[in-house]
Image (cartoon, rainbow, N blue to C red; front, top):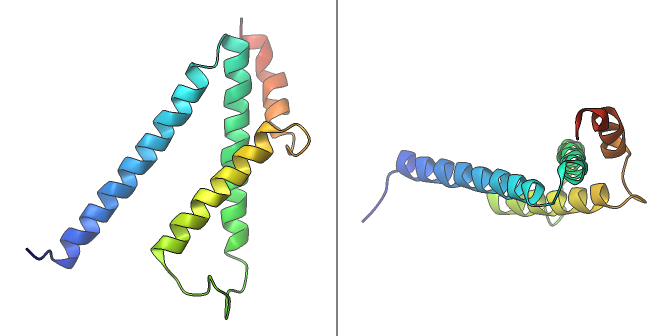
Length: 116
């Protein structure tokens, strides 16, 4: 059985969308199961910073000249791998007070008064 190119593109789109929904659900569950409201706020702030850093790294990657490098060719596999690596780096940075850019702590300080 052979699939046409539009069918394959539709399948890829649906798989990518499913991964996004699953990763969002994982983040939500990680925050919701973390404990009381203050801890949930801290986790949400860290996850927000993590998303921000991930986007920052992805945009920075677009500015790098990749000619002749091992990641020089445009490939969905390499892009997916880099996306996973950037997410992990961002999560590690945001959750460590020594490497955080401080966005999570500022969000927490601003929102703490609204949480019981």
